[in-house]
Length: 377
Image (cartoon, rainbow, N blue to C red; front, side, top):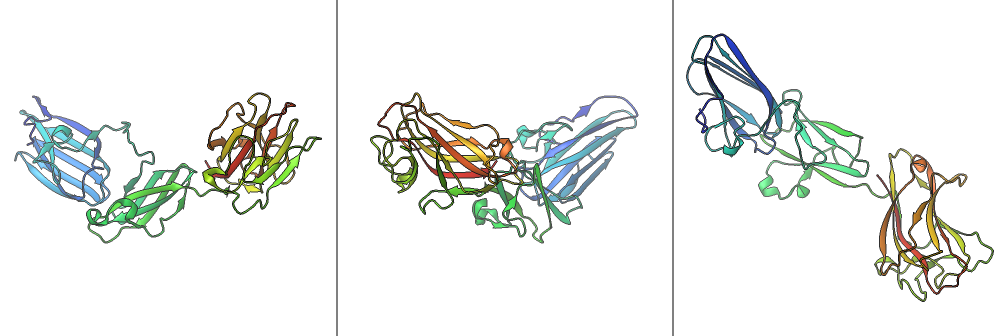
């Protein structure tokens, strides 16, 4: 039948059957009408389930090429079962496929000549799509079912187009009603809609980061933030404004006007100060990340900085402090990411930034922070 010009099986014997099953990967093939081509001596049966319904083809000796047409409007990976039977002598068997994008008739699985890949049952199919977005129909095409791997740090919108050539990239396609700005439902999102009336429609999954649970760039002031001095000298305090020390930054991150600094000028010796955020609700989260911009400019030896997470109600420390490496001398603002300690997840918390200096008198700015945010992870 096919360009390969040899059957799948060609041998001798009586009264036996051969069964082949697996998955036909048509996920990269366009919607349209295809044909399954069967040939055998004696019988050949082929059945496949697509999102558009079941394909059933049969061959009973002996025309060499019996074609059965089927149409797909939703590409995908489809399970199939193929059985060849021989009653008496001369046994041979072949199955091919033709259709859009395939040059002539090719043997099923002959990918070199254009066939969709055939994957055995249980095979691991590698994909660059971490979400493994799938579009199927479990009721013969009455409803469309969507499924994908979901992550707590993302939100999802399913978009569609009946004319992708003219509608542009998927980011410009129209959202599917009811499938906009969906939160993650770990580990899988699963949604269904009634099948549209279009003869063919394409679907695509758009992802975007979850909006920050909390963010502050300090350009509107210090509402909800509190400072503490835990040393006797009081020479250093967390101050909000434009940094102006002997060294270090001369503006906030991105040349903004405001940042929190360990003094607007140089910090003093034997300091022990803390800066606390407003209360942040981390309930119903699997994890969270703290992001901030820092400018570190201290002596590189005896000065330390760290972050603690406190329960908002009673200031109980939750988990272990996270160190900020003060041996680094920044020459520009640097973004850092700190995982929120698991003990703080599910709580309403305060973020506490601590700075402690040694007894040496240094002409440095210490540490400045800006653009503090927490997002789901």
